[in-house]
Image 1: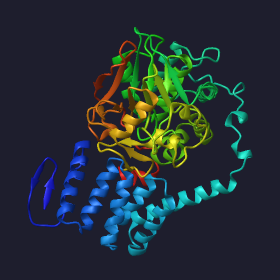
Image 2: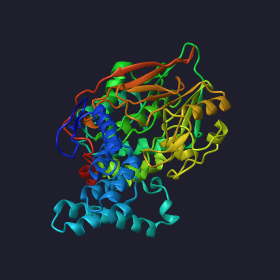
Image 3: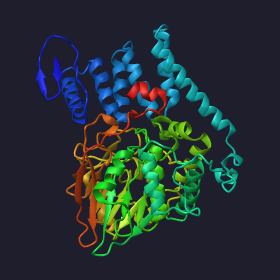
Image 4: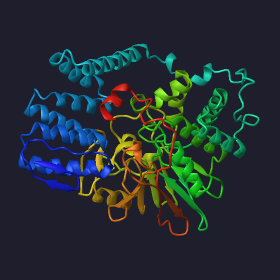
Length: 481
């Protein structure tokens, strides 16, 4: 069988090949490989190839399951070990990944690619072990305590933007965005000033932000931006700069994958300082150490500034709120609803968020879960948290007297998607995600008069020739891109 995206043709042979280039192609690949597996459930190749399609759509749990099934059918199929190792890497299961790379190297001792991946993975495993060994209460002191900002000099040759008397102003924000558009760096002193001030501001906020829009007011909700700075600027050009009369809510995953993550996050943090009561930021699953190590933000900060600055970013991310309730009727979070019934808004208020997210529980679910079309819950396609159906959404909304939820976390071809009879809305604001997906971006307007969502779509704009994942862990670059 030979299947091509959007067209099916039959021919001799036992392998299905797809020119995978856009989101719809990956989804069609999954569909057709699934059909093929119904006809031939003992094909290791089909499971391996569907595993790759799942990897490209970030369904790491499903990718891992398919790679494992592939190897159960044919333990000599080397690509299966590659797929399983990549899935485990994406899930932060480095020891399991290392075991599969060891297998490949043992079977193919002269394979340079396999040897390089083994060495990189082994390096990460050893680094993690070292970090655990030196961890102590003393090591948990804030980076802020070791910084001497007052005596940090700004060199005479630096001509970029500076905070005005230590404060962010609109003039500073406009100059900083222009600086970033020209691919110039903000001085490290200014970057540290922003981080220290935003950490203090965020640490005073509750885990659940609650706001009220008056009838004449509206707010713009944006989804994932993932280091796509030039698309972020395009949002502001299309929808206006943030102000007290033009408030924004950015719903997590500001960094990683895109290679202008520093520019994105410093811009967002700057606006948070400028407009603390009109500019809102919620934490996503990529505002975490494991994701940043794998998908580029840690590498980017170290390349453009220092490891110390990344540690401070990590501290700040831990203080980002987890959810926001608008007029007591619309709940916004990055991921979705919960692995168990009975969770209330009061439970969200009580979450101790100043940490790396746990592997389960409400905090994990808020960052990681996804909706599904069928009722009930099932194991997550990502390998973390769960998937929840329309009946789960209905019960949660009824118990908490809410109308609907807005979440992000998933790339959508049109930039948004409305599911669960209009009660679960996904918005994604990184168009042509990773320069590969050809998806549109979108943002939502919510008016205080009726809270009816109005969707606005946009397409990707050009950016400098720096590829996505340029700063990512080399294993992820090799395995995913």
